[in-house]
Length: 145
Image (cartoon, rainbow, N blue to C red; front, side, top):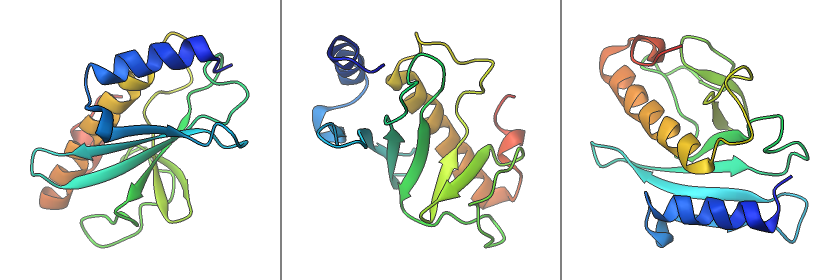
């Protein structure tokens, strides 16, 4: 369960890699808590990521869902939708026109994984995505696993 102590630990870790104006915890007074993060790629393209923290099992037994919420929808090199699950593109089924990034497989997940580690994986995913847009190669050509 995401308790106050864990939330403080997450905040401290995030401030080591991001400025405080680049991320925001929200929705804790509702049933839909989340973390929103602004990321800038090497090409200076801006993306917004939303990590859903509403699962009752997070962080104990399941990784949180992570979506690219801006820009949306993300498209492939050929202009096709990326909303479906794809091993080659490292995506899970999206929702609300937002691509869901596959960041930690169930076998790699453990409660000690912090949100900043997910953010780093998503940042790398975004670089691979931008390389895909230039070359047409699948993200699996750039990412391990």
